[in-house]
Image (tube, rainbow, N blue to C red; front, side, top):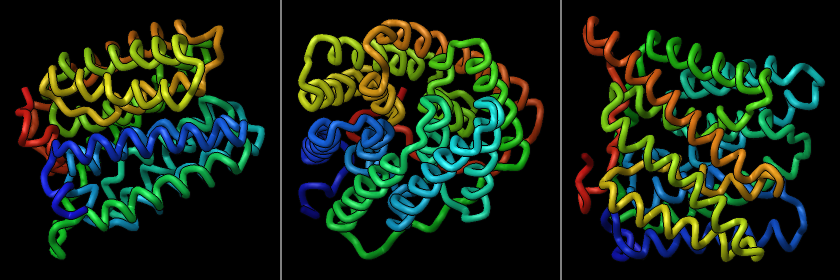
Length: 314
């Protein structure tokens, strides 16, 4: 196992990612409960097994702890009966504060916290599914480590970056929910926005194009193939190919491709359109913020590799 997963972009990483996503999807289909689906699992598999992001692998317990905590935050807030816009802002605030205090870089937790708000999940099936899937992934990540040495936890993003991100994510999400275009703020888009802000908008156009194409690919496979697990597996494969062709690594693209599993049949193309438009608008906003921020000294940012060495990032 260690040899097979010893380098970023190794074929075994892709195979394992597809297998894990297929297993999750098939389990949800067998039980017959969509809230057992965790789209961000695709992003976590890609980041940990394909791109092998060292900061994500620094503390294996984080892989389970923070996504599960985030899922619980989202579900519990939904059960309060507060307006969705209020729950969105509170959930975002809570998970950002938790990650900040814990000095964790497990940014897919942002999506885990916001997805229940967007889709109005109130069942504890969702955090249970997040716990089960991330536990398996953490164990595989441990088995695949080729060294006992782990990278030190990186420095946190500056307070100004976090505040700017909160304004963007809270404002855009509340606006999308309030106007009925909720998929404009699909949570993986906002995870991608956070990562883009840390790199000052690097390769924003290419990454936005990959994210938008992933939405369309996910819808196409979901509509064309009634067998959920097969459609999900093919979606992951297609996005992996698109990622290599575009020479960028964007784990949230995998989550966007899997999100159609949780979208009603009549809203599939509306999701593809809204999520693509939302990706473009958020990317433009991040680029504008990055240009303004260049007027100030650079902040201490989390240094997360954006691609595997096997295919250079543009």
